[in-house]
Length: 123
Image 1 (cartoon, rainbow, N blue to C red):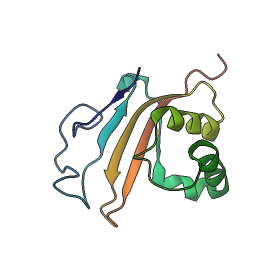
Image 2: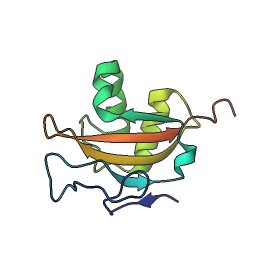
Image 3: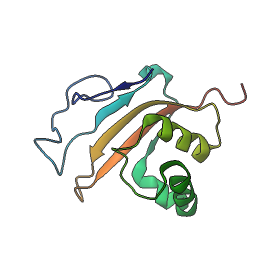
């Protein structure tokens, strides 16, 4: 079973220097979800890259998995996010390891980092 994280820690379990509460427009990325060890991570995707890579696919998958579009991921269930990534990567064996939330200091908007394992392709 996965673990939802409420502490302000980075991917290595260390406290972040700038928290969302203290620096709402320039906070450091912190873990919000974990389902495995860092050693399992084979790939990482940042949420602000989806539109740039394939906006049509993004919109289609957002509708399929989240009943709508949107760039915010804070209220999405990890099981839904994992299913989204399996479709995004065409990897039915993908395992979501961690989700981090950070803040883009150039514009103050949040972004999310998705760490996953895709080593199980073809199994």
